[in-house]
Image (cartoon, rainbow, N blue to C red; front, side, top):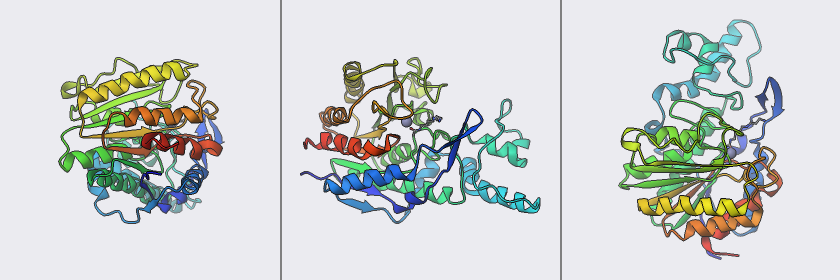
Length: 355
Ligand code: Q9C
Ligand code: ZN
């Protein structure tokens, strides 16, 4: 069968968030290592060739184009700062950094940078996205997978899959959240823009609104952002993803949201996907990037809104392929671990027209 190169890094397996805090209670973390194991195993058993991205090369350059320098300093240093503070207080260091207090007035006031508890909340918008000792290393490697994928489509590959983990689409210019630290798909888009592409389109079909990608490109017309997701009044990230968010300044008319109601099945989903793809087509981008989340699967443990089955992901792939664009797919969510690999492979086979 026609092959799709698969980029990944084994460093992702060392990303081990233990728990997420929901309504004050610790839950086992949904974005577990098993997800990636299942995807890799299924890809291997279907004959996909994988490419281990083991060097960071110029990744940090492109991460730095997307994210604020202060935010990156925070990601790099907060765990060490907190550990040193614990030791100074003769306490056991925290394994996971999770915020307690969020800024509600002046985001840039000094106290937020001088006080550790204040600092933790400054750059994290939820309690689902813990920072561990190795998080900075892990997130750079995850971004490196996206950059390597971008280089491969730039070099002429028609379809590429980047298994970035942790995922990225909830990470804003200066905020971690939704299991995301840096925005892998945005970093890939920025790579392509800075290396000659005039226009890049991003289609995000994760169950959750890609608030981070929207935030990053909201005032730009050179990167089109189109999002299909479950109604954010029912689902994370709650505060964004409505239809009337159309962009600002230069970016007006280059941001599209398609929130879908509870119970959405194939019929409505298919019509929405057609509309979204028409917008992409009209834009005539040089490259198409896909934020692929498989949490729209009918039995996904954190989904109660959109109901798609494994075979339907192939249909999504076929529809996307019809646009005839060089297409880089970046992995985002999907928490029905046992079928996640099958859902990914179904989609990838749909892209290439394989059964
Ligand atoms: N147990 C991505 O799909 N929901 N992020 C937590 C509480 C957070 C999803 C529910 C969903 C984040 C990349
Ligand atoms: Zn999601």
